[in-house]
Image (cartoon, rainbow, N blue to C red; front, side, top):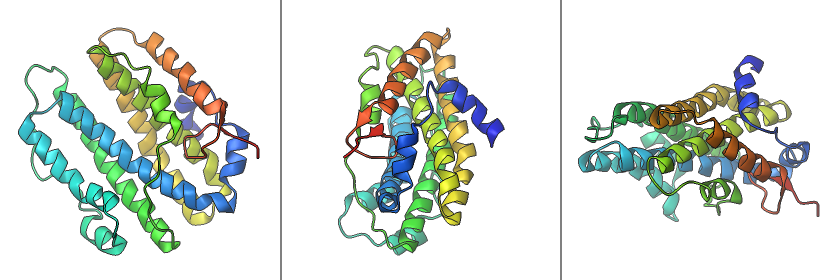
Length: 256
């Protein structure tokens, strides 16, 4: 695990504050964290899907992606949910229905598609896994309001291409790296089922961060160290400053 996490700790400018871990492992926080984690997995899939649709594929292939996501989004946005039926129908069957056609004029379409499709499939599966754990514990799925974390980084993304795409990929790398770091922080304090589950997520989350960063570097075709350092500062500030909304990616919890 330490070998896997070493690049993560090198990439992130700070570790999760002890005060966040102390709050997160309180029994009364478990329900909220699992619900937020479940939402984060779907959001990660949707973000990767947006990048593919915007930059890498034609309109027909875009519809293929939307059809892939539809069962998950239908489940999330309807009020009457049948978790058992959803898991029985979609669990471990979340493959694309057709081949995606790369968009002409974007040299990195194949690489973006390959990396992001794998990420989407894994995030959908993680969504199902968290949902199943919640069901076993009698925790109902809920939509939750997004915290400040991702928004706090996205507002610093440049507004001209290809800089916009490069910055979004760098932000994606930080989100995945922080997720990996927090799974590792929490695992030793959780019950056996959750501990094993969170440890099992480390490898995929570490690869997701590496895939995002590799794409950013390839598309930039120049050194991105300055942009990475810029977002490292922003991310660290969000993680280490006081935050009144306790979530999986929130900052230091406010003392009440």
